[in-house]
Amino acid sequence: MKKKYAPEIRMNGFDVDWEKKKLSAVVDVYDGVHQTPKYTNKGIMFLSVENIATLTSQKYISEEAFARDYKIYPERGDVFMTRIGDVGTTNVVETSEKIAFYVSLALLKPRKVDSYFLSNVIQSPLFKRELRERTLVTAVPQKINKDEIGKVDIVMPDSIDEQVQIGLYFKKINNLIMIHQRELQRLVCLRKAMIEKMFPYDGADVPAVRFGQYKKPWRLCHFSEIFTERHIIDTISDEYPQLAFTIEEGVIRPEDKKTNKRDFLIIDKATKKYLQTEYDDIIYNPANVIYGAIHRNALGRGCVSPIYKIFYTDQDSTFMECIVRHPRFIKEISRSMEGTVKKLRTLKPKAFLEMSAYIAPTIEEQRQIGEYFRQMDRLIEIEKEELEKIKHIKSACLEKMFV
Image (tube, rainbow, N blue to C red; front, side, top):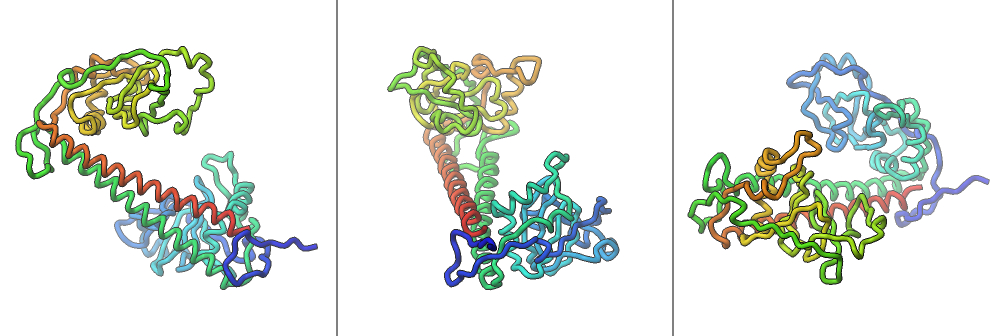
């Protein structure tokens, strides 16, 4: 008996079983040039595997080279698929302009399948699994041979109308993802620009951008004047629960740690000695501080590993976090670290307190700057969360709307 195929979730009005066939039955597969071309300042845009997300590039080849090397070339509605290094990422060609491409991309020319359906069915779990089985994963870089691509099974409806509806649905999701990615990138770039302009540099005592009501120059301040080390040894308690610290996120709950969850290995946790920390403390990892392992405790009181160094300040702590996490300050930290081997170099508390920086002269200005970046960081986090939510929806749909 012939096996019946149907996805778990279908578009309304369609109930005919899907068909399983080889990809070569519905597309023709081509690859690009095998040699790095001679680039020109203008001409025909040249794409490679790293351009798959946008299908845009700043590399070009001449019209003559294109005419010589591309008897078959991309056209509107064709699908690019990565096949060397990254395998199986797709994008649909939406331009009528001529495009040249490298061997790391496969060009799929649809014959009996909607382009957007094809692009997304390749992302489905079953297709990706079959693609991986034909991929040379031990090769460096990994790759799938062009002739193997057409041998992969594809399960699809014969109805072009159903294909088109599914393709349009995923096109809308992909467009939504792109919108949020662009907004996230805009916010990150804006923050990077403002962190540079709102703090003095090159010997200046005022920043390039400042809230209008403040006129006084910033003051050069030694950290020993404004920071005090907090070194209170304690055990875990209800009042001071165990906390974790990461380079990316700073102080977090242990259960929120994404990697290196070794807490279960600590058999004497109740008697083990930790360091107390309070809300708004500045904490750093002496060995990893040059990689960004310095944060404000934005979570609350608790206990952290004694390997960390903890300080409190009489200045606005959010503002001071901006100071100590500023890229220029991180470079200064590198000069203050002790040790001859880079991996073993550490920033001792004494060296930290000997450092200095220009700070805003009033707490009010510090708070306004700190709040500006706190709100911007929150907007970035909201955008990240929204982007992840949409990606999860897409992932679930890829699993349930394809066979």
